[in-house]
Length: 150
Image 1 (tube, rainbow, N blue to C red):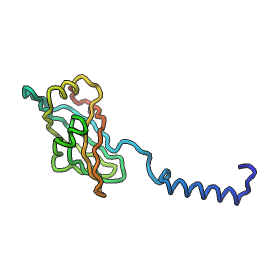
Image 2 (cartoon, rainbow, N blue to C red):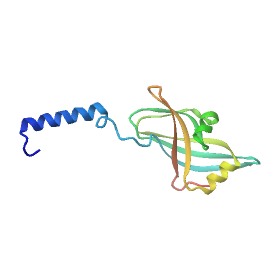
Image 3 (cartoon, helix red, strand yellow):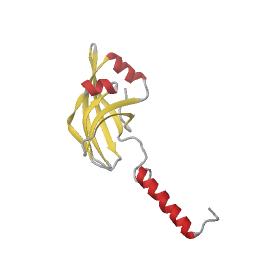
Image 4 (tube, rainbow, N blue to C red):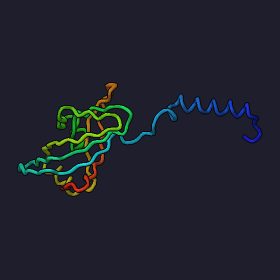
């Protein structure tokens, strides 16, 4: 590029910027997690074949778009999409905002045992964006500071 003049460099930069904007590489944020979350166990109840977990969840939305959380699940994305626990009053996560909620989950003993032994706790969330796009995402949960784990 040392052999190019100022005019040629300006044209090169303009074309490159146009390509970046048109492909979305410059205009969009890099792909990443849509929601972050933390949890604390409030109560566990043994129901023989199942266990009821009452969790305090804090969900944070780092994006520029509001998200409505409609379904929450502790199982696989497929199972949560089919039979997840409806979120209480459809929680709205405002852009760059967070919400704290308490949610009960009835899970099989197998899922509960997996949750107790696996240090990576995950939550399946069914969301809908302000533009109507529905998405099922799996997020990692970290234990709230001072909160009770399993």
